[in-house]
Image (cartoon, rainbow, N blue to C red; front, side, top):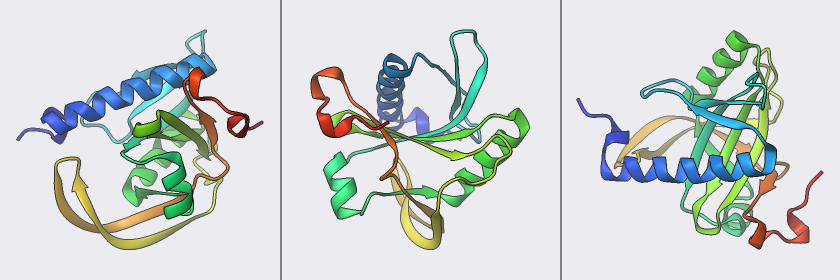
Length: 169
């Protein structure tokens, strides 16, 4: 059985993921290492000395930053199963877990520390059973989804797009 990532749409998500993580590396100096598919977490970030710093769940969305903040009140939808896997990885590797959201149209990367190195949740979220797109290739799925506010996320953009509103300390 072919993986969703092996389809044309799946391959596009890999291109977006690479653009996202390249931009993040440019701003932070951290290096992205992707896990082999299929895997329960997307990858890890390491520092220049190759020390594991974070386990990562990365998603790309065809949505602008303004649309996320206004139409969705800043909430990122992610399957609750993804968060369970991220928690297990954070505990296993004793590394904090990050949520990394790439907003494709305006090349914006949002980064939020979701869990500490014991897998304890650091951000409020709500979980609801909802119907959403099953995979990048379509279909529908009814499952538990988490809604996490990205209003306090760090914002990274290509240097030519950065405005004073994007600087968050």
